Length: 408
Image (spheres, rainbow, N blue to C red):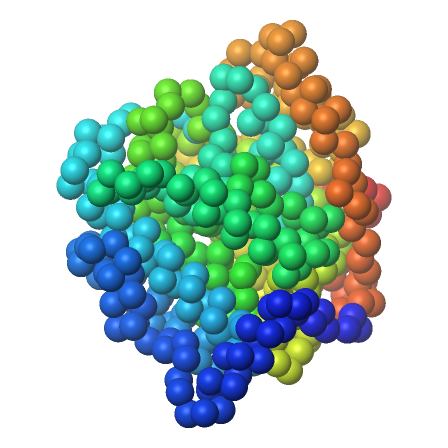
């Protein structure tokens, strides 16, 4: 079993400082919905949060954060994240009032990559985004979709760049597992945070009870709000959106209801590699925020998440109307022949493929070789599992999609 990652200095000093404040009897941060909403309203000068459906997720999130096995810095992380998403929600409601035409923009059929986390979604997403005919949404625009509404200078990029610098200082091992900068194309789960019904909160902190709630929650209103954000992005740039998130995997029905012209690319990978890589990533994301460190609880939650994602996905794919919208590709094919894998997707959906397309995608692969930021090493034994246990648990998925044990 891996040892806990400790927060580096100066984060350990923040941890100690917040802990001291708590020991003096001062409850900080105040993990209540009223406090989160008040701080978001004060920061924006706005008060309309729109449809109150988001309150259920916010209440579950904060209740879990109050009792979860987290250190003071972990609770502060959740507090700040919740305020940021509440601010985004206020801005989203206000911008719709000010610029309704932008949210009525028709979507070009977007390419949406999904699949289990750690199955190759990031590489495939960024590869497809290298086509100049496409646009992916960089992290800074997903985290901060709306410019200042009062005419102040737009400092969103600088703000998010500073956030990403701090994140990579807090979690230095993250670079070899999932490098994030302000400018890298990122996951749709980030945009879904303003609905407070998103995997983004569990990806950021060890919120096991929140994740259990999310896996059973109704996603329809969240996807309606997500689609409105896509129209906002499309209004600013007419090129085809290329999107991705493992969080779409169990939500094919909700996704296609909200974005009926979506072209879905589902990438598959050996569940052993997926599970072990996911546990390693979440060890990095969670362990420096936990007290005490409880790896088995994280492993159990991850297994339940993978199970739920794929069970719901396979059930939806039994519907012929959904099945025809999907192009299946495989991680080992992507590693062996990334350009051929991309061309298969273009052919499947009737997209234009030229020599320039191939050259642009090849240039991306040349500039971003595998393990560019370090090799990511992991094993089942690191987390108290065996490869055989994982294969047995996910045998129906392995059989349905013809996955081999020789995946790279």
